[in-house]
Image (cartoon, rainbow, N blue to C red; front, side):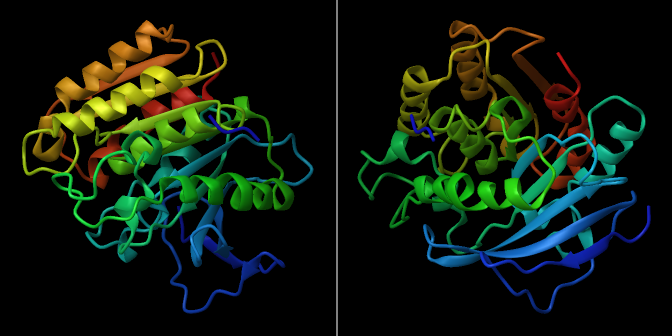
Length: 304
């Protein structure tokens, strides 16, 4: 445990900790708002990381500070025209609509782009798996970098966001969310940094390892043992988990239910500190996460 719409406007800001960005493509959205593109140097990862920060309509440095959600795979959040599969979460549109209707408090959303060459290793719950040999089925020569990725978010990116933007900095106002491997690293980061992240949301969380089809039992059990020892105590933290029932998600049920049962045994209770959902018929893709992302947003930002 470590301590510590219309076209969206694209702004490019440069700070001492941010490298200039070139060749950016304007994002599209159905809701008004602003995306600020940063290229942040990560000493932990040894590379530059693209980060898109969504500011809700009416954002002001003179307003009450905003809650923050850190999200993984940031390249898939806002603009379907630039994604590999032409799908997107449209999380800006959903968050903007829910905020406009008063269902949630308007957040600042920080989308961290993934590196396609290292994504799986970056999103691995490293301490749960580092004792496994590199030859473990499905892992091959993968370099586990989940701890370095978490260190980057907490000790490089978050201080920048806290300084540049009008946001609340406490754990109760800071959430982390993602899908698939982004879901598992979100839960892991809440466990590793309970004083930083007060809530985690995992959509279609990939608990099952990297075999074709059936879950890898050693992987599932390793993550379970880690969570058993590291889940933050209920009362200060909240957890959202969901899954579909088609494509990859069809294999998630037993592992997902196992992790939910563990959370309940640690004192997480619906509806205050735990919410779960099974989206029947939903596959493992951004369009499915777009259709249900309102659920975790309401859970994280709707008040309890």
